Image (cartoon, rainbow, N blue to C red):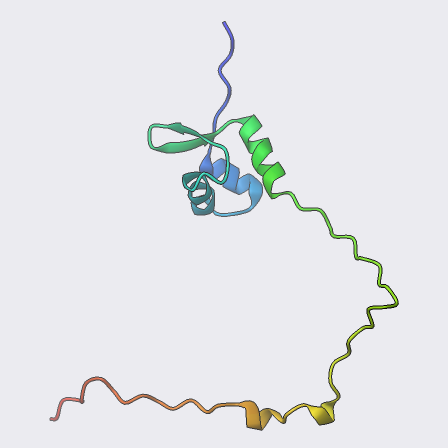
Length: 103
């Protein structure tokens, strides 16, 4: 007789990935990650867990080489920028919804 695969809970997967259990269950509910549903519980086999890690694995981007035709843009000089005081809008308090009770 073959041995049944071990199924991991969403909490176990979340601890291994360093995220919340809610996030794992939410992604499973939205069918963004593979899962097995046992009753109302999302369970994950070792293969499904490996697939989840592969889905969210990221590789560092290699910077593209600059060409001579694309000059680098620099920030505008300080004299061309507006002073901070002109660009700030003062917040005004809104009037209370209820009038305070007298007395």
